[in-house]
Figure 1 (tube, rainbow, N blue to C red):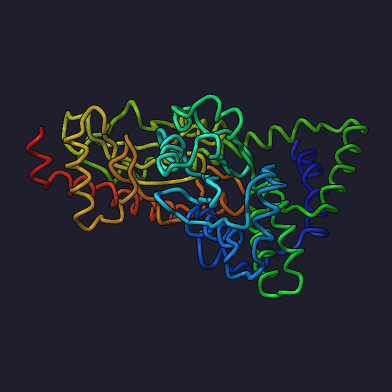
Figure 2 (figure 1 turned 90 degrees about the vertical axis):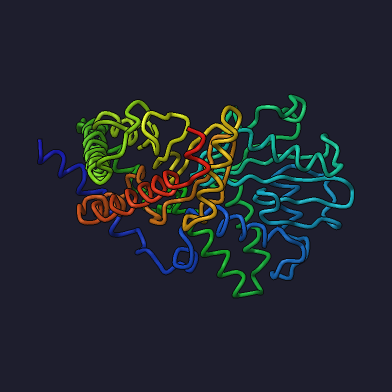
Length: 403
């Protein structure tokens, strides 16, 4: 059995060693986490789209993006201007003809409740007619926005003015056009090239074309010769199980450091089976605790879903507005002032400072997760964030008076 597995893996490894390039220096990865939606991706894309951007090429990049990527042939780019992170909208393009394009950028983060509907209403309130507002949902693979994010947007707008696009195809296509336009500007051209390389890594399209072609030829040959190709499925399953065990180790390490806090068992990832579903089925990994014993209306948690890991304080703004407001004041007035992001069910949240994507089964990721010293250090950091939040909420007089 082991000889068959070694044979299956030997040729692909030889081909990879022959055709794949070593990972090169990438300034974007050095300066920002590769999945930083706002501070890296949205800002870089907005800068290229901006007719007054530092690229100095006017409307060239914007024009191609609007007409060829979005299919908006009648959008006036000559009077357009681009805003970054305006009213929480990642990228907003609008012009003097009353036309607007909202771009919501999602690398790994989950949708917020009513998010796209809220952005649509914000722009609509600026006297932009609904029919002139376009909503673009940008993800790595072109997936659809969640129902809770789209809820409330008129059906006519969803039918005619809503579009989902991907980094894998649409942004890559656009960036390749931009790079051609920047051929006489070496610094700009190199920046776009490095960003394209980063996108290829995030979308797992950075395999050498020659390598993939040779690998397909090898696969067909092995299949024709009657080799047990299904062993590759067994190897994948073994990898997933190994990955899940490392996540389960992290789970237990976090819980061991939360001794004395009341765990929300029903909503938390509780065992190895849950960890397997997290790895293999893209379920969420969550650990939730109650700051006040027996009070379920307010919770503090660590969540990982869609590749993003973050710390959150949960409370329903609709059902418990007094608690929601008091909890928000508590965490934004103290040392935890970095918890500035809010939605209707989150008092505040922030990304985990460690950029690792826990759900990703890449070689680099799995090697990192195999280091239990690293996992212990990560669990200590997560547990400390949770305990600090619990302490702040527990000590807030206004909040305590509500229970």
